[in-house]
Amino acid sequence: MEQRWREYQKRFTWHRKIPRKTPFILVLAAVIISLAAGSPFLDTFDLSQKIRYTIEENGLRLSFDEESARIESETPILFKEKIEDKFVSNFENGLSVTYTIDPLLQEKMTDFFTKYKVPYGAFVAISPKTGKVLAMVEHSEKDKGDQHLALRATYPAASLFKLITAAAAIENGKVEPETVIRFNGGLYTLTPRNWVDNPKRDKNKITLADAMGKSCNVAFAKVALKWLGAGDLLHYAENFGFNKALDFDLPVQMSQASIENTAESIAKTAAGFGNVTLSPLHGALIASVIGNDGKMIAPRIIEKISLDGRELYNFKIKELDTCISTETAGKLKYMMTKTIESGTSRHAFYTRRGRAYLKDITIGGKTGTLEGDNPRGDYSWFVGIAPLEDPEIAVAALVINQPTWQIKASVAAREALLTYFKSNKLKTASVQ
Image 1: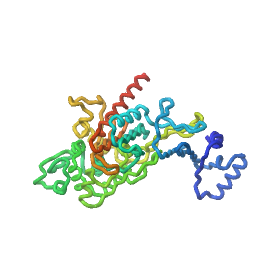
Image 2: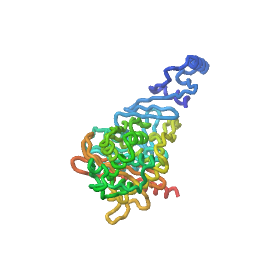
Image 3: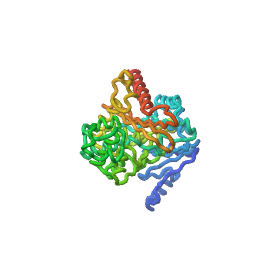
Image 4: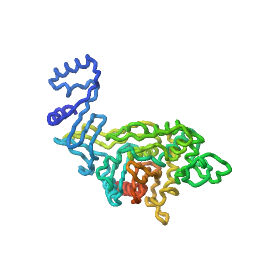
């Protein structure tokens, strides 16, 4: 790798990072080795330290070594140039970056948002087992200059946070999917009058699994107030990556969660009305954790970096954390089927006659709907995984409608899943 780079770096600006506190003896040894080899110091000095290269060209800044890579750009990467059915970015003099993006899925979702003229839209798809980003799409009919929509975390997480609440309660051994919650009022009412237990008034009942499917606010408020606290909710939120920098190839804004130790804050946060923000990338990552038996795999969008056809960097799977147990992940998967089969996304995934748009594919999902102000509008979220028996894809779709609704996020997710599985069937058929 270094010999090839010596030839290349003569034509390019590059930098190498070395720890500031290098022991004198290592520096002396490196100088001796350099003189003996008759080569530049920065090219030959390794001694178990990583050499990291940085290149800047056409608004892109690429930094990499043999184990990791990072790319920065003031504007979103334009996934247009393809080589062998893969999107690439080509630099001068033979250096190229190949992305993990699925071109068909990327182009389908780009066309989808354009067709419906959504004011703001973002879509991310990830392979739960590998962390490969299969699509990362953004569109704004409202503000063409608004960029990096898929990586921003200014959006309220809304009812997606119910997944965190359920995970915390199940992990702590307090509830099961079939635990019955008694309440009064409607499914979406959320006031102290209905989140405080009152046997005389609490005549309605719902299982936790059905509450997930129908996104029943009061059920999750009651679960948190009865069996959890602010500390538990925050702990599991951070287990899932909130208040932490995500390990990703591109700069991504941190998703944030803060919870006060009051009944009102606990109840509202648990139900999805707290001070919690989320990026679409992180939304897809949360779904992928559930799909991958509770393990978080670092998302990656750079598959390889090559110089004149020779690979300098190649993607490797990187496991970050075990967020929840395999058993809890399995229970969350089951609860997420309720969203599709009888809950808030049934109309998106089934025809009026009850036929599934994705036949023979079991899907789990969670919706979220809430008003937000950055940007202002009505937020429609969907995160999901499929097929549940052996998840291949985790998705997050966000549509911000204003002033009228153009399309729901669950419909965007359905179209993405249809595209993905139809494409995979064609690939399998061609191989056979």
